[in-house]
Length: 257
Image 1: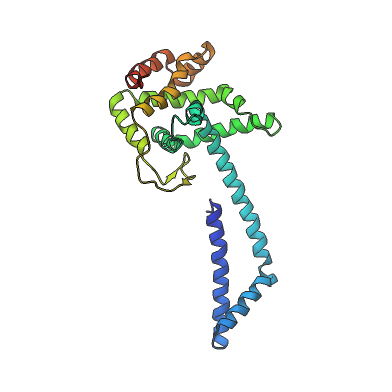
Image 2 (image 1 turned 30 degrees about the vertical axis):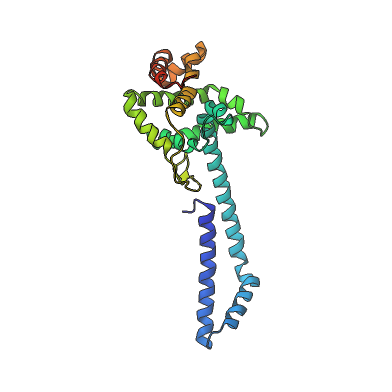
């Protein structure tokens, strides 16, 4: 099954190579085969109408692959932007290294497994609905403010908080995950971004640990009554209790001023 554009292009090329090989074998049975004969065969294949149907069918299939890649990218983008949104100021001010985002996605995926795919689809569906209502332009502020999106984010952060019930044990694991310098990162199980391996741990010590999780969790300590109720309905937990307990543990890593 074709799932990526490069895979499809390789299959297209392989079929043409097979055709060239078959033509060369046919010619070789008639007379000794030479480079000049190969050149003539290639030139004939370039203009032969016999391949027109193949090119048309391949183009149609390739467009479907491109559309699928675009759809998959949009899906990952909506959920990924939701996860990163609370940390945007820290990244824009370079208080945190943007390379940590890939490891953050891995951390979330380790908590949810394949459920990440369902949440990514849910986020993409909401984003497309908002885009359609706005005449094709996606207002990200409207996306983040949508109650369905808030519920989705609350589910993720509640699971993050629950993962820290044994705080120090989970913290040690998270530190290793966040310091890892991967060669490919991605939120989806089948969408990865390749990047060079730099051969060193990413900057993620106690300071970064505090900034990162404080940025994710502290806003939940200041929820409006309506959002607090939304949190309770989405997670079955009281935000004041769960968020307060996590922040109390996190406080020991607050960097000195």
